[in-house]
Amino acid sequence: MAKKPSAETAKTITVEQIGSPIRREAKQRQTLVGLKLNKLNRTSTLVDTPAVRGMIEKVKHLVRVVDGQ
Image (cartoon, rainbow, N blue to C red; front, side):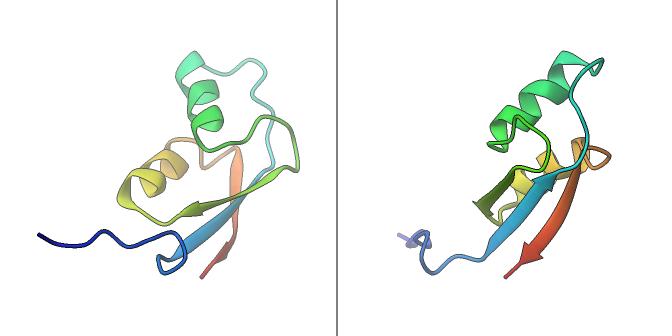
């Protein structure tokens, strides 16, 4: 059985919210909540997985990738 990478050893990505969720579709607002963002200029550090990358792609006009380690 393959071991899952722990949060300490996995690559991380930091995203910052640069756009307002006001007047956006509900799915986009929910995606921001899933990325642990809810207000402008907030940052969140997440494990860099394909799921997180897909979420960032859905709201790429509202977020900015600050750092990808």
